[in-house]
Image (cartoon, rainbow, N blue to C red; front, side, top):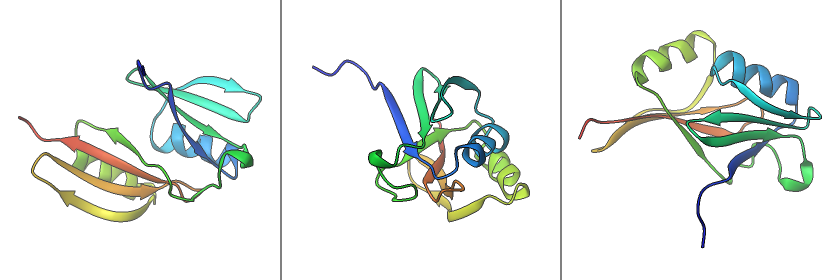
Length: 118
């Protein structure tokens, strides 16, 4: 029986460039650094990791997708645009949420997401 999600991990080509993006641009706080090859960030109790292990997949292959929840989607999108983040898909409005899809420097896609009030 599965009891929880241990981590979400994305492969990257350049760990220093990816670290600058996830910490500097997205504002994540580094929790664990294993030999500058595996970096983990705690996102509300779930570990989000970036890694430089080519045997675990190619960077930018878009096989998985992580969605980061924000309190102010419009404000966060404006900040990302000021930082010249590449948008894969602009604002998407669904009955339950609003979101946009961005790309990290390695080409991995990330969803920036805001749930609508119930």
